[in-house]
Figure: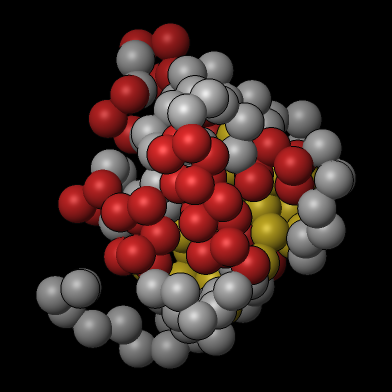
Length: 148
């Protein structure tokens, strides 16, 4: 791994541990790859998280830098090359549906009866900072349009 790649990964990790770093900075520092991410460490229980839902395919946990009163990340437990939505293939059809259905289940569990938003960031311009597909479930306040 090159020094530049290591520096980028350290910046990414720091961005997720430090609320001071902006998501835009984290996204620009992130190096798109299929390498293990902070989410793999969460799945493997190497890093603690506040899990709100888990089954054999999906894990949902509270975001450490919430952008709404309720901000939950929903991830597939097995990445299978699904680093971002733009990398989805027909073989990912089932897990993509499962992730969205899980968002609905978690929203109900969280009492988001008045509505919620789901967001998938993809690539640097989409502000993706972790290259492991994930859905942001946001709720508990009035959302604005257009989003940033």
